[in-house]
Length: 417
Image (cartoon, rainbow, N blue to C red; front, side, top):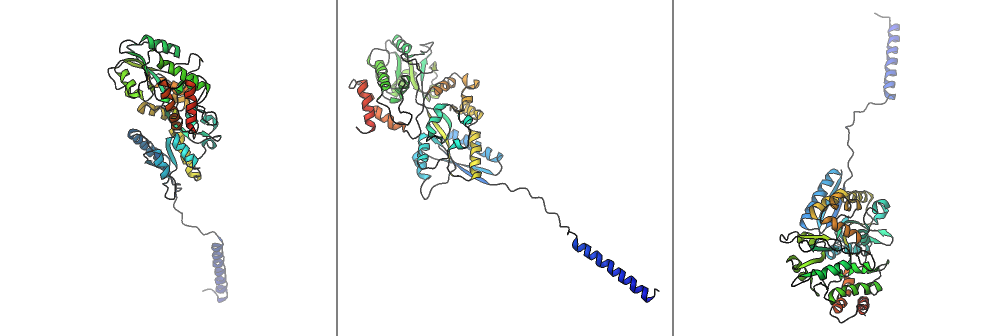
């Protein structure tokens, strides 16, 4: 047994060691239980997209939006359908306005939303090189105040020259040839050329061929111009003589004469491509409108487009998601796919000039004519101009007005004079 004095020394030493160990543990960091690994929470972005496409195209767009949402983490695209432009403009404004971040519609929708101050200027987000990859006639309808307010999705509504291959091997390339062939191919109950005489849209290509247009560079109407007088003189010459042009027929009558094989040539819209393709008894072809012989300028029909529009003032995450979507839907391959499936012409130059489209006997011609056409500036109402032209054109064809008087009456009709 240890002496008491030694035992006391040992106890004091043990107590000192225990105290030192306790102090060391207190000063050392405390080991924490490991936290479970957390994956970053994706930012949820919800975009509402409005469209007014035909059923088959609307279904295809919905499929694309669903697929895009799945691939873009944290993004959902909700597609809603609207009936017409006035209905959507009402729905998107006022205290009970429907939500929207994206819209697909015509030039009147773009103009209406822009007038409300609701559109984002897209040239602030896309490079000039990218925007220049769209052909000019398709961008005109969203160009205003020095900005681009939408991206053209598809374009059309332009006129083309259709011809009966049984009666005509090679279509005319200028108006002089058109005039001559129309006369040569007219005999009995067969006409050389038929067209929708009373609609001003059929006058417009020749107006451009004489160096004029419906408006100036600021969007001001220029119907009473020397170019309009020249275009009306040309147009009247086809109807006022025995030229081989069926005298002043309606759209329905012109189409009927052509489909029945009683007209060698027809000037009609690009929408006729799919409609005439259903006529099994007709061997037909299509060509660009002929050049105006007097000026050497190509005819330039009116081109209309539909546009992708983005709401102004979106939060950063929504605007970035919207721009990613626009980059996808405006891609040349996607546009070519829609041309193949639905006959809708692309707006990107790469797609319009792609050999797969250029080789198409119908769409290739239509694509070339589209690029030679012209559009109307943003905010210019095409119907406003066409309605002003309609009455004077009818009086011209009836012999009640000269081309000069008709051009003056068209301009005067815009101001109610």
